[in-house]
View 1 (cartoon, rainbow, N blue to C red):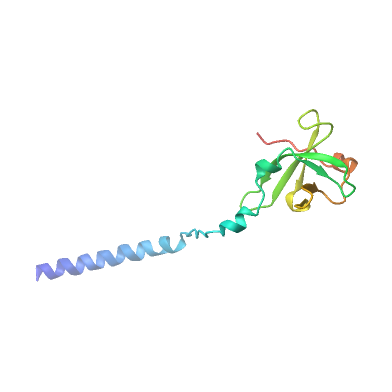
View 2 (cartoon, rainbow, N blue to C red):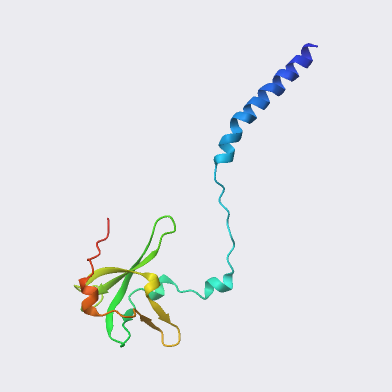
Amino acid sequence: MRHMRFNRYSALALAGVLLALAPAAASAQEVALVAPDAKEVAKGYRADELKLRAVVNDKGDIIGHIDDFIFGRDNGPVFVVLSVGDFVGLGGELVAVPFKSLKLDDSSGKIVLPGASLAALRKLPVFLYNR
């Protein structure tokens, strides 16, 4: 009989522990990894290949160069930091524009910022790295 009580108490204790842990386990978020299609990924653009490339407007005028990319937190938007001025890294001002504003023309290899001008970009707030 004593052996049966121990099993009952053990079973009750175990049930209590499981009930206590259940809400914690249920509230933990699980990360689901999705395997992307490698061929689709390969069709994209490498940031290193775009860095320092000229950005032109609709008329073909060079209006800046890609200096960097900033990725928003929590899957936020991606921004392109453009160096606007004389030459890459030589006294140009930095401005940030949404990456989705750029049009990457595969046939010509050009990176176009439609509707932009050097004057309009210089009116944007200067981008400063938060270091």
